[in-house]
Length: 368
Image (cartoon, rainbow, N blue to C red; front, side, top):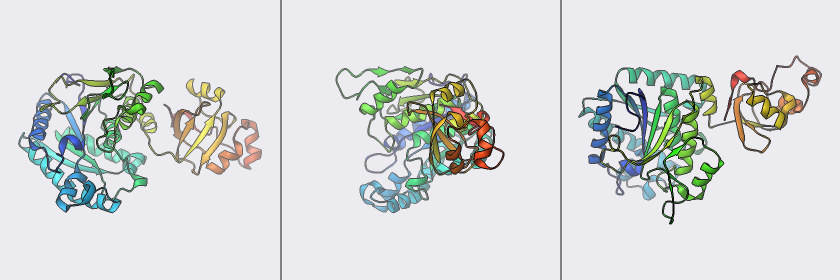
């Protein structure tokens, strides 16, 4: 129990990938899952509250429906497989956890459930109550209704968002790879990275060079994206080898992504957002001002992209084109375009009404 022990991590989110839970023939790896259930029970007994993000519904459903390509030949096949497989997945989790004296709960979520602020707060409240009752929530993306436009697409980022909503201090992504390597681990000389203090371009490039294992729908790129979300919320994240019989109680090799500090809840939600309606590009002076805790003024904007309304989540791009911040726009896109690059004392005449103080206010913005 060396990774995220209950004494230092009161709440933990564990993500389990399809390759670990489902065998190549589409059946549940019951012996392995029984070991996970035993690990969870030991941690709960020690005072830790655990939420599980579990893949596997499409793979299980495809086997029962005898669908080609694992149920992923078409969106309709995937949705049908998910609808059938989710029942089987929930049943096996309830059975395995029940054998350990634990109660399981099912929560199915879509991207919109965690991107819309009100629905996110509702999900957070449900998670908090379940965990407080010593129930183990089993979460998965609601693939029976999700389309390409409104889905996470991988449970790595979903796990990070769930951890954020649950107020977890740690996230474990159990995988068939033991963490991040500086290149494809199959290549000679590949070096395992045990600890990442800061996710920068060099770390992201390691995934881009083929450090992913190729399993599931995520891969290493999605795992690093998940680490960004978790770390922004103040949660440490580990990518750990889940092939062992009892991976949560073993000293499995892993990569730990360290969170610097916890952000306020609203700021963490903004930073972890995945769907932005538009983007505002800013100059170097505005970037310095934002770093100093200032709001984004129209004068510091250089270009506006997208179609968004006041209150929508938008991305802010730095002078080098890299993601810099996220926030809620104080203007509709059309008006934002009109005032881009203009001084504050010019805005009233341009807009024909009393302008708001900023394009994006510092209270509704999170730096990345």
